Length: 283
Ligand SMILES: C[C@](O)(CO)[C@H](O)COP(=O)(O)OP(=O)(O)OC[C@H]1O[C@@H](n2ccc(N)nc2=O)[C@H](O)[C@@H]1O
Ligand SMILES: Nc1ncnc2c1ncn2[C@@H]1O[C@H](COP(=O)(O)OP(=O)(O)OP(=O)(O)O)[C@@H](O)[C@H]1O
Image 1: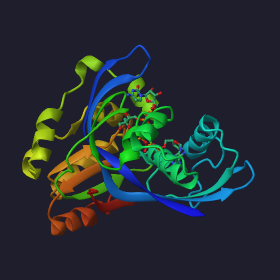
Image 2: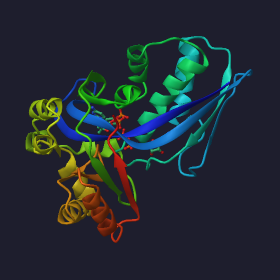
Image 3: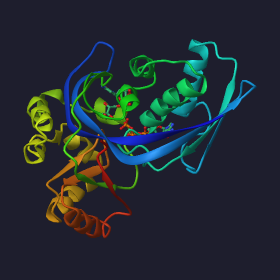
């Protein structure tokens, strides 16, 4: 039997870092939404114990270093599954971009194998397992909009955000989450009002929502990647209502509700960056 899972990327509408925790992670407060830029994972059962990965992308590992492989191993060990699986990763989400690409692939693997091996696990159970793979994986299990706390694994689903166009610009070279978090000066971080943002989202009020968008990691990532600031400025100049870095970057996203404006922003930015995407937020 063949199973296919759609694997949406994510953006952080607000990202706050509170304190460093005893476990070495940081306490987060984030409003996040899935967006319609997706990988696709295809699963085919094997009767032997082998796990094989194939992909159109040359730049992700296709062995046990891939988070998809780790997700398979986790489920096989936990539920004593005596079967293997062939998985193809149709990679469309830019890698190490701040868009949750690997985390979302891992989440889709848990969802896909739940179906393929008929484990009948709930999304909450899959999210609990996903925590062991990475801080963003539980959010990615739901493919919705949510308020994420803890190290990012405590998820409270919220109302879908007001429909809008999302323009994504992914500058060359990624940034690792580890590097960004290690350099943080917590006392100097800005704070974005996620409660007010969630209120605006619940009222489907786009104009009010964008007033509260922001990413506390922008400053530190910007030190490594001065192009982030340049792209933000260009995006606002071409008419985006807001221009914010997603996750630990380097991707910058802009929001607008007008398609004509979205097209103008895309055409303007294509002059500065190769990887420019125009997508919608997911319902
Ligand atoms: C920045 C975000 O992408 C926002 O969505 C996430 O908070 C990070 O998610 P992620 O990359 O999946 O993070 P993980 O793979 O769990 O951790 C990578 C590294 O980032 C740092 N990290 C991550 C999450 C967190 N709450 N505190 C941290 O300090 C840690 O150094 C960790 O070793
Ligand atoms: N299936 C996968 N897809 C993408 N990257 C993967 C995958 N498996 C392992 N990786 C590795 O994980 C690293 C992080 O990639 P990823 O795309 O998850 O970063 P990201 O978009 O910044 O995610 P986040 O926003 O959660 O930090 C990359 O260096 C990549 O080589």
